[in-house]
Length: 259
Length: 126
Image 1: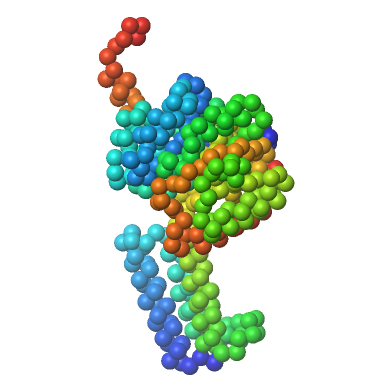
Image 2: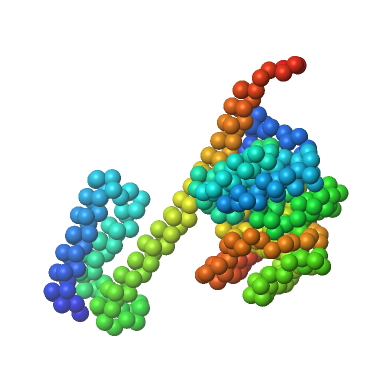
């Protein structure tokens, strides 16, 4: 397992980041939900309330990624802990800020979902059940395993299918939705997620491959997804860069030496 | 072979680059770690301008016949190397800025939490 085998200088899996015991303020339930948000004042409050209904004891963290609207105050009013970036740094950086917070809180189970209303908070309960059962270290909510999910546009569907096939080949395990942002992790996985090896630039199928290479067990569960609020990060030249970046990132992660 | 006029131009250009880089370092506008590549480039130009043998040797090595083409080829290689070094430096700085901004967000939240705890009225059992 990663936690026991890695941390040697010169290999790619990260050494354990230093977090002093005094810096940890244990999360009450051990469950922490991360929601990265950029200009989501209209949805974030309702989302926090919905998560609270599903997981009443969980700590809910909204990472406000340099929003120019009232996202932070809306989230705070709904009872979430708010971490505010001084400027916009992107989805991946916002997620990692949440992971770093989870690490200082000593959370046992970390769940993440998007703030744009795409993910059903009810899925959190199913993901948590899988993690608590101890059968997987990483759990992915897959829209392709749920019948009633929203269907993305054709080009995105093709790209998603392509990366699903690639991820399945590398993992030698059927992965249907490696690009899903609805994910859950056990505490030990944070060791990788908070390191500089975590690809903050569109973290996606490459993260699944890296986690697999680090020895973590990955499982998928069905999750219903709705259409997001339309602020897709994949517009303009971005889809071309996304495919290039993902292929390069997957390729180099396979080249890295794992001890 | 290179004409005398070409050699003179290369040597003068190298001297100007050398003086300009040293002046930038003196004024702290350019860090020593970035100056070495430019100074090395200037020295290479002076050596190329003063020694005919360099072109003979480089021509044999690369198969390039024209001395001016040799100058252009190695000039482009040099600039590509500098660009790559700057890209690596930029990536490194981006990671550092990201880590700093994340640390700032975490510490700000911690400060808010401590402030709220301090302002909270004492309760029974506190």
